[in-house]
Image (cartoon, rainbow, N blue to C red; front, side):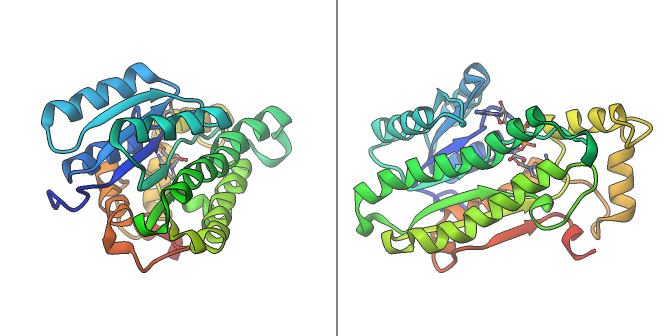
Length: 268
Ligand SMILES: NC(=O)c1ccc[n+]([C@@H]2O[C@H](COP(=O)([O-])OP(=O)(O)OC[C@H]3O[C@@H](n4cnc5c(N)ncnc54)[C@H](O)[C@@H]3O)[C@@H](O)[C@H]2O)c1
């Protein structure tokens, strides 16, 4: 960690109450950034913000938001600006999964996953970029960071809608880079593989429930054995370095890229 690498950066993070969003908030603040933690679960997000404020260095606030609502994205951006004076980086991390085999997908499954993982990313990017554009190009390069997945790059039989949503995140990253460059805004992202978080713990249970796996923990074991080059699953701390790099000025000459941080899964 570099203590002042993100000094002067004011960062909105969606889905920051737990998992990778919370870990990134803590890592960013440890490097001097001020962070606004947006989540449906405001109480948990506030606990993360309290931990950050107790440590010192960057400051934190927590806001309640449903990323699928445009007005909540706008108000989270406004809260960031009100607390810290401007916004430099948006990290669009909120996401969920609910596995289904292809013929079992229904409209509810489709809409829930596509709305949170893809439509909300577009809304967050647009509302954040709106503020960045108002701040003027001399304040940039501003950074939008999209959380994709191995499912942005490889088809997976048990999670068609999740793959569709995460391929959409890749498209938003590439198209956003083209569309926002004139405003001195870059758009990049990162694509994890298996990260031990509440999302994966629930997925592990759901995979047994739909009959894709026979026992709890089998999905982890099978992926390590068959898909990963680095023979272990990952933890949020394995991801924070890449997220920090993308939030920092070290990545100023990059746009439209989604970096795989997946233990080599994408190569297999
Ligand atoms: N865990 C993994 O293995 C893995 C792998 C690849 C990609 N990802 C992606 O990384 C991101 C973070 O995942 P995680 O594993 O830390 O998940 P998590 O479930 O631990 O945390 C997700 C957070 O998003 C919040 N959230 C969900 N819906 C929301 C909404 N409508 N509005 C506001 N907040 C909402 C939840 O309350 C939660 O705090 C997601 O986009 C996920 O798809 C995860």
